[in-house]
Image 1: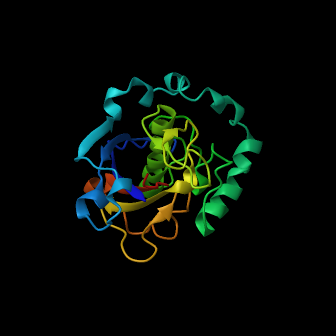
Image 2: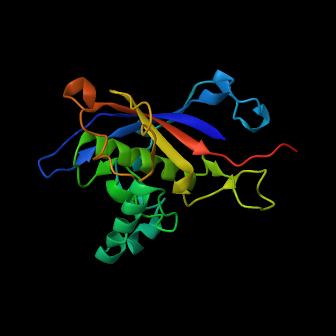
Length: 223
């Protein structure tokens, strides 16, 4: 089943060396429960609209060294060989699904590390905000604020459990602001390239704040 969240990226700061920084607001947004379009209500996440995370209140979001506390394994993947492997993740995500085994990769967007708002290679606002949406989901998994369930036959099928490594293939996202992506092809896996759909989805000043609806697949059964 799908539970949904909305992510808003604010305060863009683009420097001369092509780096950028964004704050991220993560909102709990149980859309399917509100619409009441799925009768299997036991498997749906109920609740009200709520602010789940504000990165302005998180000191690790502005500091690469502080964020290292949450992702010490990043030191293993900050090399050309590990980053070159992300090309395979980019191809997989853009054609079907991302490779969960390459958990340090954000596909065509770049690297999942560090868990902060700095984008080292800013190609465009759509690419940068998509990267931080995916990175934020990983950060919430690491902080045990997002849990996972399994789809295979397993005793854990009917339960959620902490997953410090994000299962990327269970997520999809679609832009809702400034220009929504709708219709067929409007929903994308984590790591899929934005070059295909991102043109025309960013414009100066007001169009540089981005919002995404993030869908998470949930394996569930009624007991």
